[in-house]
Length: 370
Image 1: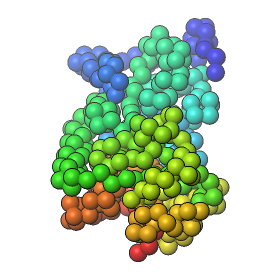
Image 2: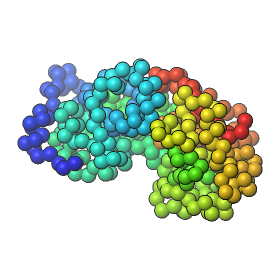
Image 3: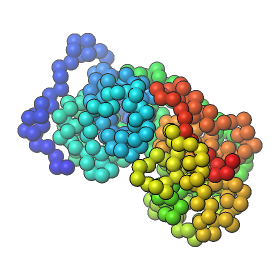
Image 4: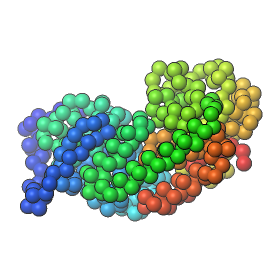
């Protein structure tokens, strides 16, 4: 959208509320975000616009942390993953009435709407930050700090920085430190076990949104691609797609002959052939949607199919603070001896118990055949 004139900004009443005496006297909070940028807050933010990473925000700030949110990018949660949104709306009823500020993915981000909400902090994912350019600069000009978080890149240092930054910004530093420590320890455990295996099995990951009749994206240099790097696997897509994600040719997949195949599913709407995973999804439903992949042309001869190594895994796990649960699952399939005592589903269940306000159920990671 076009930038706002200063007159328009003033008309929207952008002067932030006067700080209370206590807030004014408090020591400033200096926060380093995922990109190494530094922002300073007088106190934990009280009027936040949140663009993405809703579950991470909730894990760190808790349901009460949403009392600080005055607007958010609704579509990524309510429209893309409505069953998850409905589940979180029970402990966080405020979600039903929060204003929508749009998003950068479909160019609906509405700067004027953001400014009308008089935020004292805007939190956005790196990919949104990079696409907004002049609009981000205008926020800075108007004295509204922008905090950049990044879980999509799957760079551990950015995971940690994002988590600690959200903790400071919302007044939940202790909880954020605990989450960062959990993530660090789990990743170290995964990598220690994987190194002991001494092998690099070949893995292929494909997005299962369109079903077996559609060649979905695979991943490199981020998301699933980075997770495969972290566990020491040989990602057959590495160097064979132009960007961080994109489709591989069917012929190349056959020639690469992966040892294990993971189809990334989710709770997408209006996708009748999609591989369904997540809350409320029975195992038999996931397996029924996964089964046609084993019958793709040439796939019955692949090592992965012949050895029963076709799996479904929740796509949201490749851009999350609790991605280590997905790494445990990926690694357990290709390094079974080293991960024999690990139950990745229990890891995800425990994360819910410790950090999330919703109960764990459904199917998040599963083999095509029992």
